Length: 222
Image (cartoon, rainbow, N blue to C red; front, side, top):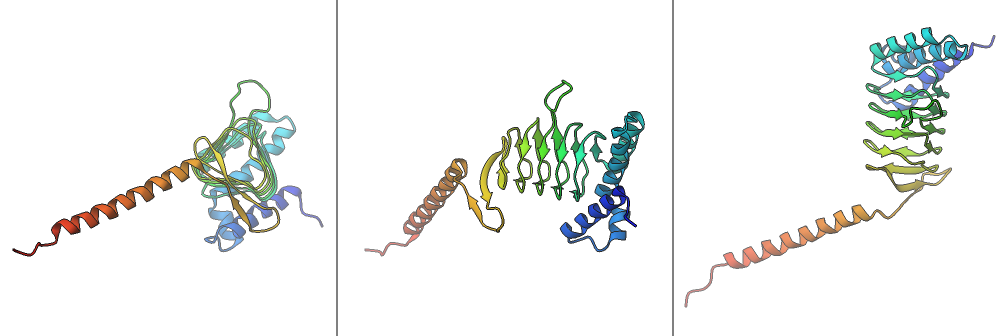
């Protein structure tokens, strides 16, 4: 007998936590103690109601889930299989957000909108995207498969597949090649300037220390 889709999705969400969190020991622990999973269970129930046009009960389920978990997921958002919301407090997923399969969101992530019109105004995350703690992805932008968004970054433009983005505003610093572990790092002018300044400071400190030692050497008496 084939299990219902919602049961399969909850199992996949639990497996995602088990595979990506070294602290997770078994499904029972994840089911009882992981607020990210609780938020997803509530979301999937609310989404099923929302898809049938039963919107007020759907919003109430979402509202109570936010009170319980600190995670806000709009019932109309579309979320794929195997999402892991790690810790989760402060996560916000807007109405028109779309999240692919096997994505990973950490605490404080916002998938927010910039428009007040009834249109696609929230981000789309393709499969296998990792979004670090406190990152904000704003507007109807697209984050390609396998991309990684660094903690605290603010992303307002689309991100190509495999890219690593950091900073405010977010900028690409590396690409991961599809199908292997190779990462190609890109030039970062800001980092290069900071590194050059650090090297210059270290050089000046060394010269100052050498000059100080020379001054402190006692001179022979005549």
